[in-house]
Amino acid sequence: MELTVLGTSSMIPTKERNVSGYFLAFEKEGILLDCGEGTQRQMNHAGIRRTRVTRVLITHWHGDHVSGLIGLLQTIGNEEPTTKLEVHGPQETKKRMQHLLQSCVFENKVQLEIYEHDPNWMREICEGKSVHVGKMVVKPEQVTFVENGKKFVYIPDTTLNKFIPMLAKDADVMLIESTYAADLPEKAEEYMHLTANDAAMMAQQANVKRLVLTHFSQRYKEVSQIQSDASTIFPETVCAYDFMKIKV
Ligand SMILES: [Zn+2]
Image (tube, rainbow, N blue to C red; front, side):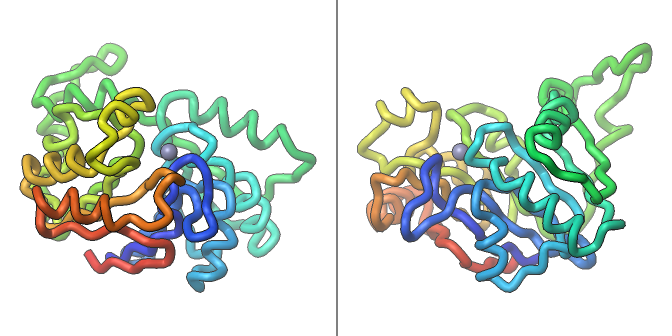
């Protein structure tokens, strides 16, 4: 797998950093993790053709993570009108995609397949509990399995919670937000984000091999403080930058 970082800023793009977007190439799959405003242009700079995208994973519907979607669909449709594209996201993704498609004068030529994922359902399964889906009872062992290979985890906008180390356990690479340096825990709490220390502690608890920090507040022109805060707790830390490539 190879990850190309397309945007490392939090809500507001800066001269150095675009908003969220990451492209994960894996065999024939091209998985776009979030698609903030300007992601297409970042793809141009990174040399990634839009039609390489086979799936878009939307982590949540904040503007800085999805505002580039409509333009991307328009371009992909123009380049190859029969292209199929899977869009995966949280609950209400189907409704929001519909709103998005209706918001512009635009003929959608991409064959969209939209999937919604229920975080509560996932949470229970992660905790080893069976869940009810309609009249069916689904046991964790029926829908989860370990496949040998590499593990890559992406954790965007979040507060500290016990599910992070659970989901990221033994990952080869954990890409996680670190909006603030360690000296602004009150800001992190107010805006529901992580500091560098939080992210590093999560990496330690999850026993990941490499920690990659991203989603930096626009207050930081450069991120050496974030890097040094996190490295003190978890030495295998790097701060991502736009167009960085990471082999997993
Ligand atoms: Zn965000």
